[in-house]
Image (cartoon, rainbow, N blue to C red; front, side, top):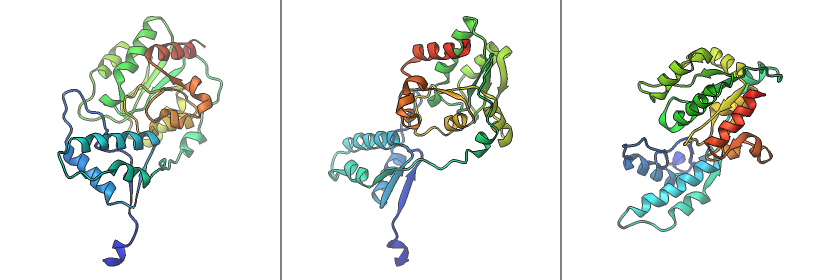
Length: 250
């Protein structure tokens, strides 16, 4: 109807098919990427959940257009940027805040993994740090939750075997209230992700009182206040080992 045609159109990107990292050996399907681009061009405004997401998407748009041999309108990335806005998603954090643990944490502290069991969350780096600390005799407990799929990285099974005596919970929790309780009972949340456009699971854990240790990249510098970057962000796996080990040793 003509009345609908006159209404402004807002597109919200929580993920996209242009700058999402691929597993080794995978090839990107540019049909979906092109659909994202056309959607942007048809939108009055384009909203992203983080500035990192917006910037990485627009860089990928530039690379996509460079592959096209001809008939590429000039200034497409700039046109999208001018109509873009960063709009973090709304979250109901009341269940995490309401039952938040007391602040006097006592060892052994519980480390939380509440991310998807997928390549882009870089579980190998996470567990390598834990294997190292365990070998050093550092005491800790471990809760591994997060969404699983038909296949997941083999390191999860290795971790289940090598860290069995430290496990509080291992596996996806379909019951939301049980998941919330697990998060509230944890002390430290760690991310080693190579891809994160926002970080819902990390924010849930922070709201529940977990001490975050996050890579100084992706969207994380946006969700952590600048004055706390030195405390909560790390530059590489070596610094993660040092910071996490210091926390666990008290």
